[in-house]
Image 1 (tube, rainbow, N blue to C red):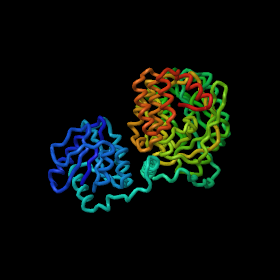
Image 2: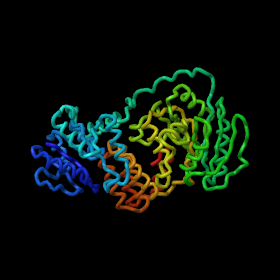
Image 3: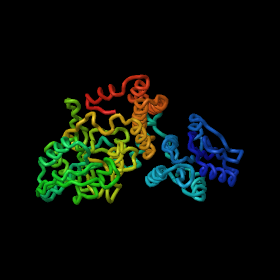
Image 4: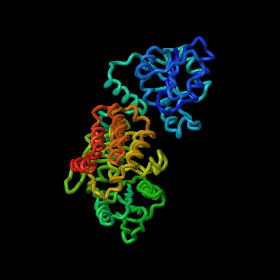
Length: 483
């Protein structure tokens, strides 16, 4: 038996259904079961069936080969039942989907040997035939253990295998001393808009860095006239200002700085944050010792209403899976020390297409972590100011839209229940704070289904029932926590 699973949600997969239908007609000796769900049912009467989730899982155990669409949940379920899935991603040129996120996701899985992907009907037929003739090549063996916890663990391991990560508990390699005493020049990129007093404080802390090399500062004014009086020609700490030449907003301002920088190492600093004296030296030591490292972060001191909370990540290395599970607030953009080439000539600059620009720093972390592990200095070397003038304070519809975009752009979240529940809970809270009670409860339910202990889901439900969202955020911020 060949089982073809396309899911039962609102997405249709006419191409895969059509391929499976033609395959069944051409091979009447093979029993082909097709879960059609939202897709139009095949014409072939025999061998067509619909399964609910439980029935589908049972059929996977029985099947000789399993064909899936490119959804991570279905792929993980097939692998959990011992199959190497034969996968057909959505085709963005058809009506099946609006972008190529799933195509790229399946391509990464295929490169890692975690699925066998097919992009044509001929390839599909040949691959299914091979699975029936050589079943051992398409079996993963019996999974060890069972239950929800074991399934979640295996889903996490699938992501680890996908990106070739070592165990996140393992320590990063010890740095080797740099062969010379040279310290590379660094460009500090400071986007700003209408906060002159805070900006001057941030610039003073950059100037006062305990760093032996040259630190160039580039202030990028977003939707405001540049203040040329800030410029200084100092040899060790030069400063110049410019206007945002990219898309309006924080992402465009950062990209303006990236494109204008003349140094390989660049660092971000928001205009309301302050670097502590040893910040650049500690991070540059890692960069000098490890030429392959593309991003180094550090801990933070959160200042909210006069109360300071220390947030330090007690590890020296962070991977893609870690960031799917948690945003890791400690990795604040004002702590970033980057290799410019990793962005401009590598994975791309800061994403300017995210709705409202919300979470662009987190999306950049995910992209960089997918390339290589992020290094971290476990000392609080940046003071981060949380205050009512935060650009995203109260912009709940924008936050909800941006987080839903993130789940679409990174389908890997579906393989990490804790991470999906976290983002779904944030969406639920944003919808509740925006007064959209029905949507809030739907996303709260989705979060609880992924992880019953997700606290954001219950906070969102409370806000939907009348709890003021501002009171929740104040209580979290006083503890140095965000949503």
